[in-house]
Amino acid sequence: MYTQEELTEAKHQIDSTLHKLREVVQTLESKNEPARYKSQITLAKRRIQAFTIANELIERELDR
Image (cartoon, rainbow, N blue to C red; front, side, top):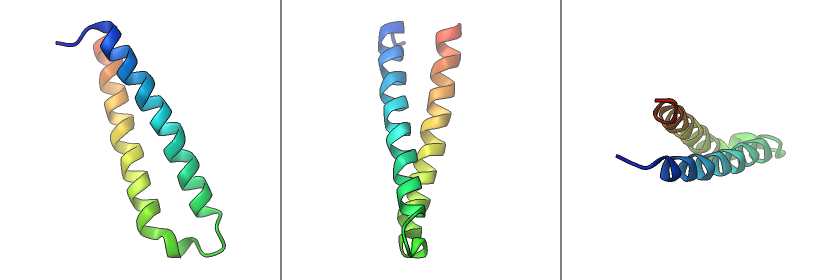
C-alpha cells in the first residue's frame, strides 16, 4: 500500500488540479459563445468528477 505521506501528497496534487479545472470550466462557460467550447467543458467536468472520486477514496484510506 501507499504511505500516509504519499496519500497526503496525492490528495494535495488532486486538490490543486481540481481548483484549476474548476477555473477552466468557469472561464469557458463565461465566454461569449460557450457552446463553442462544449467538448472542452464536458471533458473538464468529467475530469472534475473523476478527481473528486479519487480524492474521496484517498480520504477514506487516510481515515483508516
